[in-house]
Image 1 (cartoon, rainbow, N blue to C red):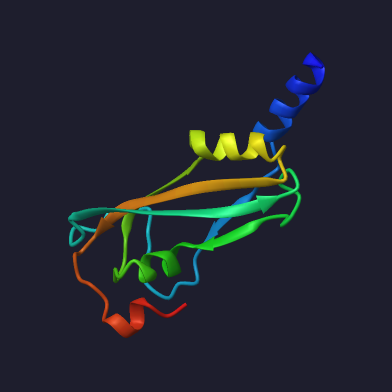
Image 2: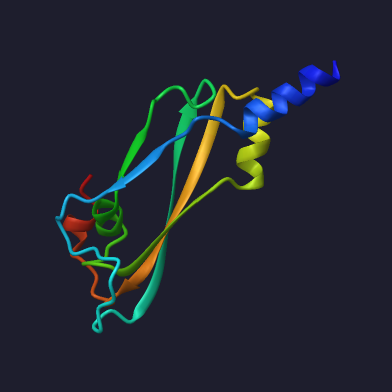
Length: 123
């Protein structure tokens, strides 16, 4: 019984989840600094995986689309964090790994210019 519990915990914590971060080059997004960008912002998102991270095989997150949806016209000094918060780990454990949410945070600096409403809400 103890071995089954240990294997369940290990399977729920160590799934094969992959999130690829890419850009469509629709708005300027850079890891380098831009002197016009002085406002620090964070964009939080998540993707869902199923069956111990097997389905889907991977998720693609387009950084410029995330920044645009948040209403910004560009971002510099970009930092991307992937994380598993305690709630995600608990959900993965309780579902025996059949459902595995994964979160990410995109942090960077913007100019403070907000895109027009119709541009920032398109998906």
